Image 1 (cartoon, each protein chain N blue to C red):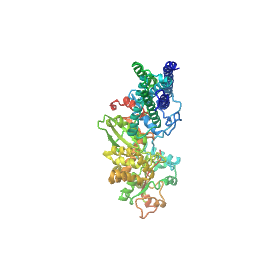
Image 2 (tube, each protein chain N blue to C red):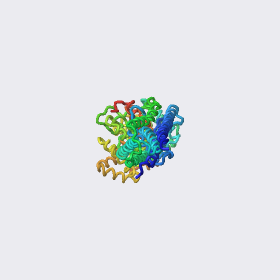
Image 3 (cartoon, rainbow over the protein chains, first blue to last red):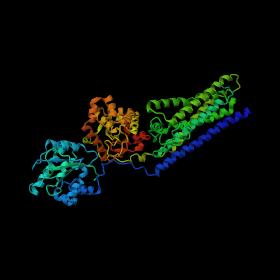
Length: 235
Length: 401
């Protein structure tokens, strides 16, 4: 028995080692080759990973985006044209929307934005206006565009008010440039000046956050203004 | 103690070798599965042959670490160390079977040889266990399985060797001096075969390395990114990281272990996966990451120091973040003082972090961290762990010492 063991033992040990080694090597080879085949011809699509993008919040309804996209495209904000901003006739044409519907679209931005108020026939920003602008500008979150919708009151001719609201929009743009020092600000800020011809605000808008809280506000003064807000939509 | 003729020591060695073989096999096959650059579940259990699972963080940490494989410059992912264990345990199993059958007829020199080489897995386990504790901070269950098998094997061979002391009468043959030399040669060959098979069948990963896109927009001063400049920078890089992301921490540790961080000039864009500041998430994946990111921004010249502190203390910071912002602020203040905390609370810092996030948006990066760009070339996610060194060697050889 002991002599048999002496012969059988090394053979059994060696055989088991070789068999196990062979089986394991084949298993390793199969595992590596299978991975190589999956690499060359993936069977399953890679799981899709979300891509970083601007914010898209519930108020970005198709109608809202349609109007803003038309305005953005037509008023030179997208596409790198030289034109900067839109005057009342443009907005009327491009937005294809009634005055009240246009204003209604901005209702969800009541708390996000603010109304910068101006003195009669003036376009200078006072300290409160600058503070409101700085606060709103700083609160960008995931927004891509910052909208400025400047207006003028009914007093005076349409031409004069159109020019006045244009200057008001520009005052805001200049201040934002100075504040942000952002070389790409032109691609972020959309200017609309409506004069007194389109989408005048009613007295109810006096309750919106504005730069002259607590001061007299009526149908006339609320339109000596510029509504400003970041817009959290992918346009 | 066992008698000289006892078959119990080789039986223990055989069981131990089979156990080690089982753990080494599942570890090797897990490693090989990842050669397709996909993410797979891992066998990470004290039970040999247990089903693979997603909850295998410690095993993944070990697998992705620089200590898991050799020749990582030459082969994508390297040659896993478990392959050598596979070969060695195969040899030990065969040898233990031989001693078990031979019993008292086995030469003294064969038993002595087995006692000497049978201790080596325990020595290797001690080294790897120390690395796990000191460098990785976690123990993978499969690795612990191999440590236990190594201990049992050492026990078996030691008991076998002690049995020789009771056999001074010479019933057991001495055996030739050539016997240990031949066995040693066989051990070397058997240990190398699986590694050779693995290396010879590996797919070529080079065509995939530069297929993951480029940075669309270079960082500019207006993006206000943080800086991490190494001691001898030779290459620019842009990282998108979340200080409370475990994968980012592991990636950072790998770069440090590879000595790569010192050779990089990194523009760091903080990308916290926390909905408090990051609009791209509907809920916070890492609560508190926005606050900690602001702390990194406030670190300014010490941004890297703050980031590395956040990684070192990530578990505690994550717990504090889940409790609430005041708790997290207290932890930050305790380490970095009131001045830094006041910076964290400022509107300016909030805007800078917002610029980091917009930089990510402009580059359309994946909402997943870390995202790594060497120069303008994006490093694929699957190349930031197992294949990191191979990838660096091919995409930026100047970074690999």
